[in-house]
Image 1 (cartoon, rainbow, N blue to C red):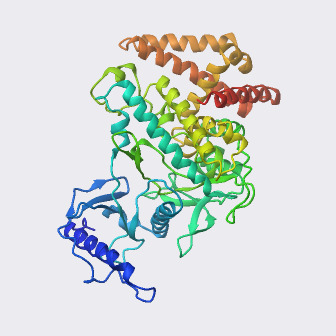
Image 2: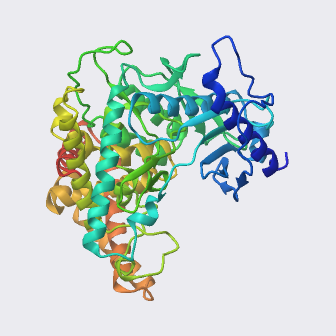
Image 3: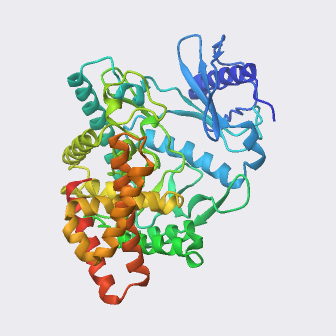
Length: 504
């Protein structure tokens, strides 16, 4: 299918807006067919269509009316329409209805949805969402603004984190006894929780097919089912079996908050799951010049998640240092005025600072909303947010199996750091020969990397030692004696709890 004509978009947008302006003049019996021209409304021509913005699966067309009003048309990329199946149609409908629900029931700054079609049976011959174009600029540009003083930047960032926390806490209103995708009725209200949907990256089909698991009655089944769905080779490949063994152990340590709120009409008393933004990253937020949040996007795939991975977890860019496969910060980034190829990132020290700041913002938001929400023990103490650093890393390891070993290696490195080398060596019962072998590998790496600077040598050496610890832990969990496993599990649990207490 060829790209959609800008003239067609302009004509259709003008038609929809004209019909909206006179909609109040019609009773329930006066049905307006939005696919038929309507001459009753005012004329908003000329309508300007700006250059499209391309995403992974969708393309966005900015629409500007003559009176300054701006809309945004979201539709699938033309090349994906041949695979736009029932699942994709349901996902688009759910996204549109989710935005409408949030506009009705919260003050979260999400775009207003003016019209949507989940099939191609319309004038544009494509599924689409026609929505408000939110003001402001991308948070990424504001967060890494090099043109202002550090003190001003910090105040701006604090304002942003405060606004995000205020928005995310409002999702507490939508809590459920089951985890999975939310199902809307014909009136746009949530009436059930259905299976959790994700792409099957192991399938030979191109593009990947969608698989459904759940719904889940408890958080443990949520994590373990997704783990075994995304690591299907675990029974056949030793390399996968040991990763799964380590993940299963760490997942068993995740603390789940115990809510004390009274049940709503939609949910059972335990409220183990809560509506959660699926990708609260820096690229899905817009802010004004003062850092106030003007728009939160990326709600496609929003679902009921366990509270430990729910609405109070850290925003994704504040935990980027937990994903060693993508974290690329170095000291040169702090003084450079040129954006690196990997994009700007904060230092570990700065990330730790802003995680503490966000945790405080969550607590403040909970206190402000205490008349509406009865706080939970774990949430009240901030543990849900602090624990989310570790939980998010484990979730990445679950859902992105190619990253699993590297991310888990980073988690173990942090456990070793908080517990100390001596306790690590004792727990793993490392022999002098094993330590000597790692030392020899470190020396060899230093010789082979003679062209590297001291920092790169140090990183290489640390990686070798961390890999040794990871291998030893995995080996004991899969082939060790019951007593060895007991010692290692205790070691991991102690370190895990310390990481949660520190908040990453």
